[in-house]
Length: 423
Image (tube, rainbow, N blue to C red):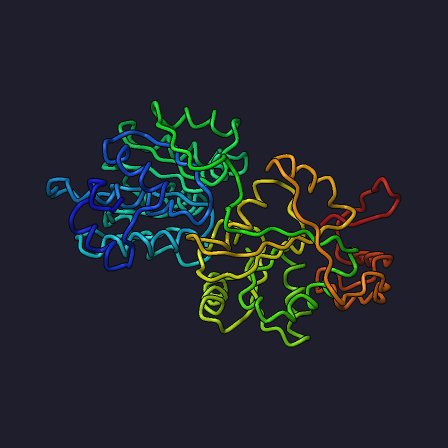
């Protein structure tokens, strides 16, 4: 099947052709016609299967068909959980809308808000936003959504979990009732799907493949390893030249920084990506990774839903994820667009319960491997508090210094018996 049979606008077909795409993916084939027909829709498909284009192309087609309106106003609002995903969606929309007279703006934290306020007040046609900053600017009456026609929740499972749900509800309450609402994700539990009825009207459900099934182009392995040997095993595996573009997931931000330092000390060029990094630092890390300036990107789960980088050869779960959905999204960063990739997971004794839960969820076991030539019986290195980073710069058995009395205030008796001073 070709894009020409899906009912897309001629100018959009031209942009798609110029981007090098000739045939739609299954999710695009299934989702584009009902979106053009005006239905609300829930789209579920594996990562890397073209979900962004599945909602972008038909929405742009509908915008191209609108009659000229002298009253400017935002017609499309796309909400995504991370800055990186917002930027990625913006890039895709601009590429597909290059022959249309449309404006696209982004809204997210970590950068100055004045340019975003000006864009919202000017009535930019398409806004791609993170919910936190968007709510802030809506509170400043910077946004006018009275002309809104389309709302998209990308990574809908994350948008509707308990962390984001209150913000999403507040945003949606401020939008016109008559609109088209689309939700896309690689994973969507039955509990989360039940919440979609708050925001959608009789949605069509398009599901490609088994729900939440890892991409078939990703080969998955588990390395069972003592916790103190994970870094040594990682360095051992990185000796393989085929691991030429590696995304490594750490559970904690400070642990990601520490791991990157350890790899750099061994001659492995690294960048880090997590929420404590500034927006410029995060964009530079992604650019360096995409351009090959660094071989390894060490990230927290912010990257599991936030980046689309071609050619990632390996995903390494240095810290095994606590939730099945996080595993699905992590390994989906490789094996994208029908390319092949490897997903490697380090599993310690503490991770066995999570591993069993994952295997039950995907309906099969994951192959266990042993690294040839690696010493699994090596002793743990001596504890070095300096290696822990500034968050753990003191030995763990050292008590905190007591606040001096001359700072004023009255003492307060703690349950531990220590006296601390309240300012």
